[in-house]
Image 1 (cartoon, rainbow, N blue to C red):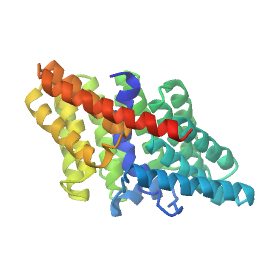
Image 2 (image 1 turned 90 degrees about the vertical axis):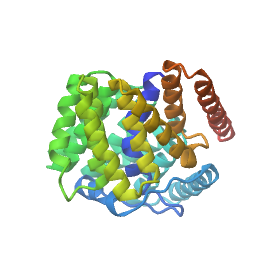
Image 3 (image 1 turned 120 degrees about the horizontal axis):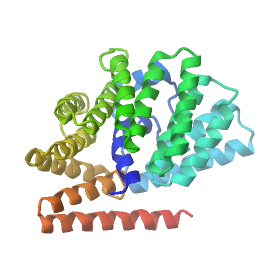
Image 4 (image 1 turned 90 degrees about the horizontal axis):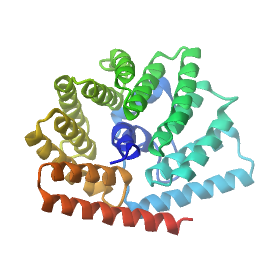
Length: 325
């Protein structure tokens, strides 16, 4: 799997719930950043719509954007619209459209609330990892960090440290990633004001960084904590728990524990298929990684089945993208 695909596993698993849960079906979106955003995810269940519903929502939000532009809607409303569109496009794998929407949001926020500007910069940076542009991502994350620090937002600063750690994991700069991930963990891990989503995310990022620094035993302990937190918060059969199991399996594979890796990766991909099997890139990338694992174990028939699933899902994504041009 190429580095952009791995970035989707490392970054999107951590941010999917945080980002998508706030975009509704009727064109309303929750706002907030820093501590407010970090608090927000704990008391709601994330939505993961199927492909027809996702396309319907994109249509609703595109109509809102057109109406807002034509009617010269105020900045606050247009920021919310472009933020929502960016998230929906990203979820659908329509990255250029997501990039355009987020850039419009950032332009509107340059003279607006700086905490929201930092959120938008962080969103664009995460998107650029998935798009295979780590240089732009780093530039945007460092700008977001300067903004967070300038407004005295310690929780937002720690969230950006975590995002920077994800970026450096993607670039295989594991020492630098570990430094940022540990700093984020120290601030966010046990703060009752911070949502479970954020506390899970910092554990996952630190686990990746530890494993990259040949400390996989510590990493697996952290991911087991993240799995239990996901199960307690969202339910044992939730997509969030399934994604956490997949990451636990992936790290176990890296540590050499192939028996547990096989079970946890299978459990994770099975659960992800229920909500994301229509062609979401997170599922496609997870299945491709799982297929590589199976081939390494000599399970050629099972690997071939997983690869067919990847091709099927990719064809759905390609057809959808063409239909929306």
